[in-house]
Image (tube, rainbow, N blue to C red):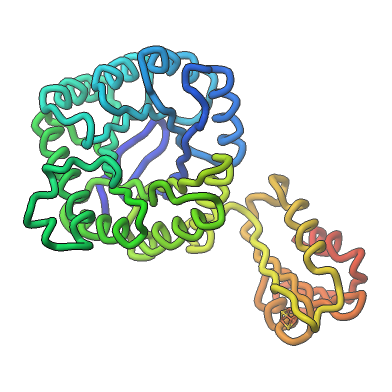
Length: 350
Ligand code: SF4
């Protein structure tokens, strides 16, 4: 169990729901474009949004962006601690500092003092691409594959000591590597040594197909072990895809419910209907709507081999034959429906 901190209205850690984060991909200085992207993220279900702060113009944009969005806004800071100070003054709900490039103790303490005064939490965002070399040391280097995980953990723990010197404890930690196994190892090791809440993610996970797999494995393994308090799926693509992926990971692990879940077979030579099209249309009909919060499992199966079994197990199910299917609700047969009426029949029974 981690300690709990607050980011805007969201509680992170201490058994709170695992919050979904993403990051705008716009130039933060372009307030209109950034607000547009964050609003799209909000609609997709993002609960905390981060923006990159490259310069003081971006830091001052925080003020205007903040006014126009509903979810907490996180300022992502590298290299210059004065940008963090400007963002706190401009109303950022959380600051991410990179120990790899903001490491002078007096700078970190200066940021921590202001953050404490304004009740703004800080994420110690360690990243394998920018971890401080001096954190590794020759002993760690000798450990081969473990070098990176140990270096990530040490980097975070050293930084936390500096923040704690300033009596600052509203800390969240991330230990992201682009390698899934290193990421898992780093979070496991850190969680044995500290109870600060953890922001999970596999950094630079890649384009959608590979990024989804790496993130689902990295984040999923840790969540199954009870490690992690908030997640960000990192994909080279539309950030709304990151949010959908995060929701799917949490729902697959039964950690949160975001609405109906479709269970459908891959189809094979036994299938006599266009199941792909039925499932696609059903998924479209279930997009945010009156049904969106209902935790129902809907099975859509292509034939009588596994079809009736899965359809009976789900809350609602349909097992197709030729041009028609048998509709089940809570394990009982409701009726036989023609393929063209299947979606309507499913929706009517939710
Ligand atoms: S349920 Fe039937 S159609 Fe679907 S994959 Fe299994 S055997 Fe093939």
